[in-house]
Image (cartoon, rainbow, N blue to C red; front, side, top):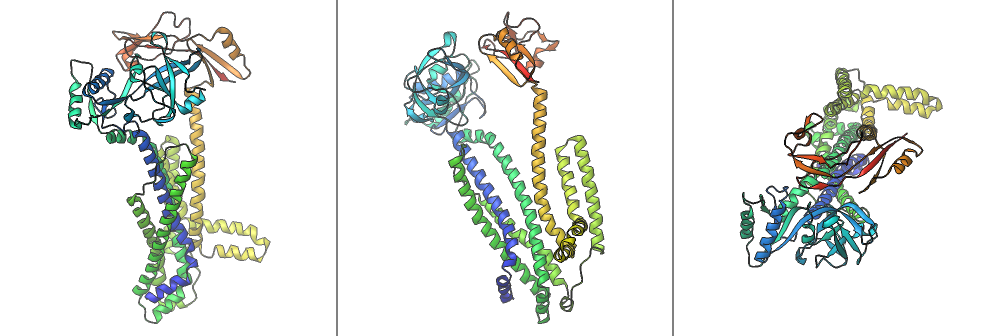
Length: 611
């Protein structure tokens, strides 16, 4: 039988092309998904961990994602200075930035910290040098170019008594997750009232122990002080925590892509089963002759299943090679053309192994039923002419009955999903509906083909022969059509879902934000004349002027806003207090809770809606 197996593989190679392609595409799909997802994770890991990678410890406020208090950050910096260690607080403050001549660069932008120790600098200098004095600053290269800033330019950060003039001495590139406009000395950032630190990167001196420093940092926290909790972590631990949050989108994308891979696997099963059904039907006489010359049914069955196994092994191996080439090549192309942090693909043995084994199992399982059908017929019956198949059998009637039930359940599920707007119900109902269509395929597809045949058979004898041949074997025709049906259905479903999501988003935005254009002036009213001009533009249906002003936060004692307790409105122990004259007449001032004692700038705005 080994000779028969090898001879069969050589003889029927061309007939296996469709099955090989189906399995190889499904396997390659999974491998490419793994390559792109691992590259995205690697790129995000590098970006997220960039500010911490050069330190020995990272100080946070309690939990990994808890920010330390300002007093705690200053205490950690003082400890490092006292012991000869180095720190790099990852802190920033949101401030207006103006040029030296008074023209505005940005009304409200983050200003971060440049590490004092050159060994802890995580930003990549593009031009110039780093910060070496409190009156110097490094600008983000891309944002500086957009704002026409360069080395040697002076900028004014902040307003009033907090305003400070800094000279740009360098241009650098930061991280995707730390997009500051400027990086200044920590003393400059800490001079503003509203600065906050996310973490403190700590570099331990050569004669110091990391464990000892961690204990010293923890000892800084005291109930009698405002330092609060301080906990040390390794840079890798903090990066992993940040990465888990940033990776949520990548994981969701991977799951969506794997859904497509699962659909490709289902299509592969149908294509392979159809291929083997046709192949074994054509070889039924050959198999019967093998039975007549002494081969047992078990030997014939084992031979054809080994045939399917060999096809599965070769197809899966081809899929791995093609997927690896496409995955690594695709990532290299994306890194060269797309502005997105992508690392080097890290092949996952689990994914690759699952793809390979899945491809082999898919082939063997898909060929299982055709092999049983091919070897179940007796040798003499197989040598006789085969009668045309019919669905008017017990198995056919049972399949039709089951298909009607499943299709009816799908219709009920889809109707329920429409009324309840439930995603799970919709997916379940759609799956049942599609399953019912597939089960009824041997009845529906020939009926449709007969209708088409009535139209095309008038074109000549070739069309009549094609129409009759298409309905000669309903199950085989239905299996072939189902593969195409899945592809068309999937494409239609994705396009419909995208259109529905876009329509729902637009409707939600119109309901929640019923304005189209906002005109704002920072620090000064826009004036009645400008408001009238905006209202008079062609296409403007209505406009509303929203006066603004400064607000200060005061402790809540026993106050209500519009008969609603303040703690229910703001969920905090602070209450916005509008300064006198900030809002007058029937207009209202929008404000939010702020830290007690702090002040928050508000702008006067005119919002309008198109007609």
